Length: 447
Image (tube, rainbow, N blue to C red):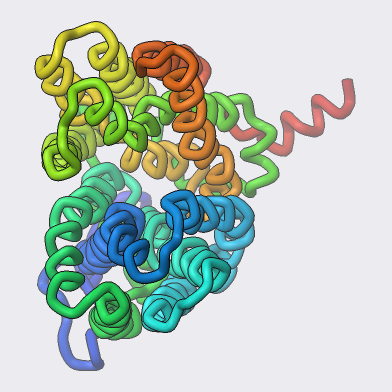
């Protein structure tokens, strides 16, 4: 009898369609989850290429026309970050309740319309309010949290590879976005450039999200990973992966989640120093703004390769081992900037912080999904995101303050490296949590 059930289960998996009907006519000849990955890659590409990585290109032309200070222009980015801190917890719950499609669609429209309205700004408060909406209510909705939740819902055992591909949109968007946006500004001016970006964003993403995004494979009669499961040695590592659902409250009561947050908060400080690279290279070595731009762009090439490396390894090795290795390697980058001569320090920084250590964008969603399941993934991710934003807010200020006090950036970079090693130590406590069973809870209550 059991063999008959096994045969029936195998036959059911074999007969499972690879894809739902697209526009009521076509089926993809491969697992539909990879289409979800492609859409999320596109969303992250636009969010990065039209977001934080290129906003600085607008500073000089806006400054020339409007007479605003650099502090007023940079303030919009800070406003978007602060807005994201308050929005993320609510956004995660909305995604888990209503699904990814309405949230991604709404975010695309908010970001697109906000960019179009940027063509009319005359006052600083208008600029801050619009960019805060674009960043916190727009880009964060259709990319980042929403796209990671969408991919994690469709994959369990191949989650690392899937997130590796989708999050490459962040780095490739940064590499490609800067020259494209600069060209648009040169051709039509900064005001019209905002409008072109908004229209292009909505024109590409709205139809993709409307037609192709589905929240979970079960909603369209499929199973995660297309029914694929690892075998042999890979099955041993897969035993650490769970699809058991945890709520945000349950996850917050585990030591493991707080240990993970410690890793990502302290370890994330090592990359937050990138904000201070331009003044560092200009002040210490007299490099021009154009030279600095090329160096920063060059950093994201090995950073993209890093995601390929670790996105593959995290499906083969214990995630905690990958997390520890990445955190130690990226912490070496600031020490290289502080203690090795120019230009060797830049090469070593790109090696350790870029090629070998730029994988938090993959490891964070992979480990949250592996440890706490898919059902409340967005709520848990949204709940911890405000903590993840702390390095971006605090570290550049600490480095700047130390540079003003000492006249050099060495002390600030040493601080970043040491904080990164604290994050590596936290990884020792970031093992897979074990959910208490009802019998265990009852027994504990009776003691």
